[in-house]
Image (cartoon, rainbow, N blue to C red):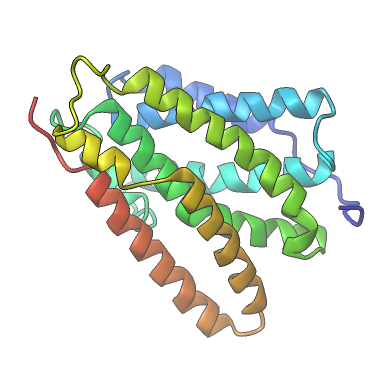
Length: 228
C-alpha cells in the first residue's frame, strides 16, 4: 500500500487501556481472560511496528487502533450499563459463570473481535486513510498471521492436556467447531462487502446488524457451560 499519508494515533494508548483493565479485573473474569490474550497480540504488533516489519507502518497502526477501539468501546458500554454490540453480549453476560472454562472466554472474545469488529475496522481504516480494502490486504494478512499464532498459544496454554481432555469431552467438540482462520477469511469478505455497500447506508446497516447477530450467536455457543 502506498497511498496513506495521514498522521495516526499511536498504539501506546491502546496498550495502556488494556493494561489498566488487566490490573483492575479479577484474573478469572471472562473479559479479563480475553483482555490478557488481546494485550499479548497488541504488544506483538507494537514490537513489529517498532522493528519496521510491516509493509506500511501508518496503515497497520490505523488498522490496529481502529480495531482495538471497537473492543474498548464494548467494554465501556458494559461498564456504563449500556448494551454492547450483540457479538460481545455473551462474553459480558457469562464472564463470571463458574461452568465456563478460560479457553472458552478467550475464544468467545476472539470470535466477537475477529468475526464482527475486524471487518468494521477495515472499513473505518479505509475511510480514515482514503484508500480501498485491497490497499490494506498486506496489513490485514500480517496482523492475521499474528492472530493465528496466538490461537495456537491459547490452545496450548488454556486447554487441558490430553490426559484430561478426551475425544468425548464436550470441550473438544466446542473447540473443534470454531476456526480463527475461517473467521479471518469471513471478516475480509465482510469488509469488502461493507465497502461495496458504503453508498447504500440502509443496506450496509442491515448487513452489519445481521453480522453482529450471527457472530453473537456463535459466541453464545462457545460459552456453553460445561461440567467439571
